[in-house]
Length: 344
Length: 258
Image 1 (cartoon, each protein chain N blue to C red):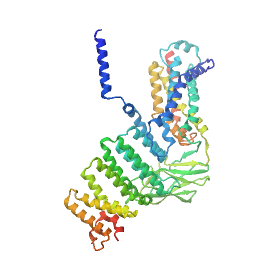
Image 2: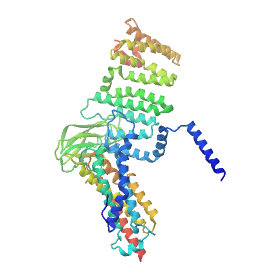
Image 3: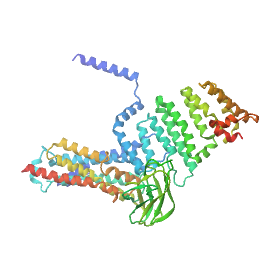
Image 4: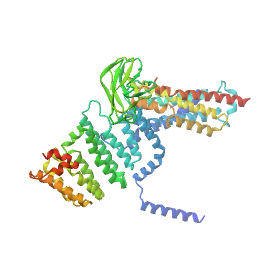
């Protein structure tokens, strides 16, 4: 394949990142498809679950992000101290970041190009459903305990037709003899016939179907039982009626997955004001690992939501990316100020 | 310099002897790779299990649990916990017949535990004992499952099969006695399935086995009770069943002794 002649830090970095990461990403994607079958012990009768394939989809995503970040930091001379051509580039290149910002954008664009097919078509190969439904976590009331003494909890769902509500409370030790607690669902004050869920222990998830109507007030009512239930954030989720094509969901996920790479490169740029390339690479690699495989950041949630067929944008998953974006922006500004101070 | 060829020959001989003593195998290579990967992967595997518990569904949780047991094939307690949860706690599929769904889950759980035996090593018998009691617990908890199992002699028949295998492997007095004292439940299951001859055979075998119970007083009493039940089943209505009715261990048999 012949790539167009590239000039300017964005295009130069984009082309180099693409060249460096394309083949390893493809190999990692193939390994991610093959390894689950090679390593797993088959057990007939156990239903498959796309959500459990998230490590295998994260593998090529991490490879693409890590190689793009490493190539960008290694290529653009202003990313680290004592790089060949650093002084020349610093004199010639204009702008507050002297081309490093454009190099980061080039790396992110290369990652986007590589991960888009993985998250749209590749996710389907891992068993992701063809469509994605919108899931919204409902904000709990200040006292989210449902007991005989506090027999009702009210939630405000988003103003759109709902398909179902998903309950997964925490259970406190029973008060007296153990009798699982039954919970009745009410919509806008009216009892929904048949919508009763029973909980005896924590993390018993129950999904109750709803008529596809817009609801302004959703209430959980204690019916009987001795197990006090707690409904913190995340314990009540509503699923919107209707669904969107998974391809759009994959595209949104690919954009969200740029945030960890941006934060990693931004902090690498900050470190590069006072450190050489090995340190810069280490900073980028560690931050990327922590934000993706380590689960601190949006990557894990985004991949899980995608494979489970849950809409990722905008949702709670989307907002998990904001800290990465904010921290990366602060690091970019810090890197710029440090370099400006060093030149004086 | 003169030592280098000698060292090379010595190394080649050592390698050849090592290969002869312990020939390389794919399983050993796989185990080595797993041992290297395990510490790096397990924390994330458990985090994934936690994530599935909080916001996933049962299928995802069990698939994650399966990934963990694939990484730790010798962790028999883990296999047992996951399989018990599959048989006892998993929610029935929407619209599914509760009995059929419970039976499918029990069969899958038993297959899971059976598969784990190959890697359980010295804990194989413990795993068999844990497996043995799963059908009984599941049937107690899910009446629709007990109904489904009735035709095959009830949950006790499955339990006895696994206890027999454990007894074959270890042959300890404790396991033998467990089987001996399971006899009324197993016979009741067989009577429920209409297999009177097999039920009688089970009780007759239990009378013989009771002789080896370590507590001799208990053995004698147990033999007497079993003999009374056998006589009743053989049509002798003069036998006094007062002691049998007063013994809670014979409760499963009482419906068939009227």
